[in-house]
Structures are given as structure tokens and as C-alpha cells.
Length: 284
Image 1 (cartoon, rainbow, N blue to C red):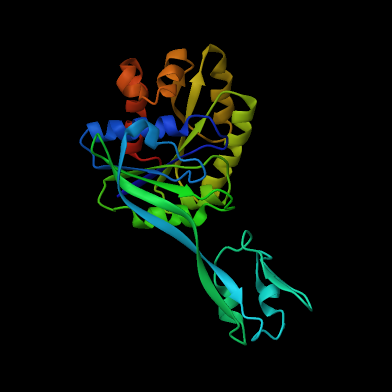
Image 2: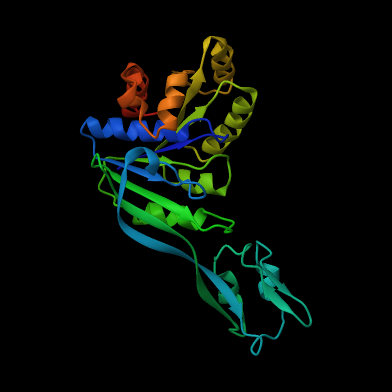
């Protein structure tokens, strides 16, 4: 199974637009397709593909609990925690759950065996199919939880592995959640827009995929007659632009209605065809 992660440095550039339309088009071509919405803080791909959930699975993170009757306040757990999630004072000790990554190091190191790990539900994943018939899954992080990484990791692990291509609709930015989304991917599609903010954040996304040694290409959304200079600027970043989607009010209208561009505006089908051809050739 090949894995393509659709990312961008900036929110609102059109990752979900490209992810959903590419998944639908791959499926129409007879390719066994899976679409995973790993933007667990704000998943919305299901709005465009008529998702039929079959299975829901809670996602848990292990949070340490300190038994004060056993703890001798040696401070080893606090010293070794890389996330400063444990505080020990002469009269008080506390586990700061929002900072805890659930790695379990403190429990393994405690010489008094005073630390046990208790599960905490931080979100859930939903798996199933779309009305069109291709595989779909999404992660949903509970409100107030600081990190979507465990949700993304479990979604990727539990989703069926029988597709020919897996498309991941990643979170915006260049955070830990994006790194987890990209982990294990064969290639990445970077979506940007022809604005100074778009170019600035594209640099951050390129830095991440380059550090992870993942082959990538770039597509530009909302492209118009004044956008040509951005193609040249992107080339100076050692990145190749393989497709542009024009700035068109009709596209915005179709998207706002929760519909797919390739179905409602077939004149833009060649844009997505070019991307699929590039994916087929490989991004290396």
C-alpha cells in the first residue's frame, strides 16, 4: 500500500479539497483507495464524502498516578520527565496531565514502584466506508486535549491495510501532529496559495518533509494571472509545482456546499489528473 500525505504549512489552503477529490478520482479509476482524515482537532473530510461509520474506537493515553504512601520523594521521575509533567515538592506532588505524553518512563524508573499508569480517553477514531465505496477513517480529539498525536497514531494503525493507496488529510502547520501524519508516508503533496503567508508557511512544510526525507511535490490553490511569480519563488526552494487550481468563485461555492470539484466542475478534472499521473510516476 502506497501512502500519500497531503500537508501545508498554513491552514485554509485547500488540503481537504485536494485530499477528497483525489481520493474520489482514484476510486473512480478502479484503484482501491483509503482516505484518512488525520486532522483530529478539526476533521471535516467526512462532509464531502458521505461517510458511513462502521466502527468507533476510543483512544486512550496512559497517565501516571503516584501513590504517596510509597513515594519517597527521590525526584527521579521529575528529573527524567522530558515534558516537565511531574512536580514534586516537600508537601505536594502533582502530575500535569496536559503535559504528559504517556511514554511510561516514570513508571519504569520509579525505584519504589510508586507510579502506576491509568488510562484516560482523549478522543476516538471512526472507521468505515463512503457511499461511493472507498475506505474512510477519521480521528477526533476531545475538546481540551493538547495533543492529537496518539489519535493520529492509532488511526493509522487500526485502519485496514488492504488499499492500494492511502491518502492522509493532515493537520495544518508543521507541528508534532504533522510529523506523526507524515511518518511512514511514501510521498507528500504540499498545498499552498500564492500569498506571502502561503509562501512563508510552505517553507516550514518543506523543511519538515525534507528533514524526514519524504519525496514531495507542490500544488498551488487559488492561482490567478498575478500568481506566476510564486511559481518561480517556489522553484527557488528546490520544489516542483505539478499543478495549479485557479481562483474561481464557482470552486468556492461548490466547496461551501460540501461537494466535490471533480464531480460538479468537470472542467477542472485535468488538474487532478495531472496530480494522479505524478503520483503514479513517483515523487522521487
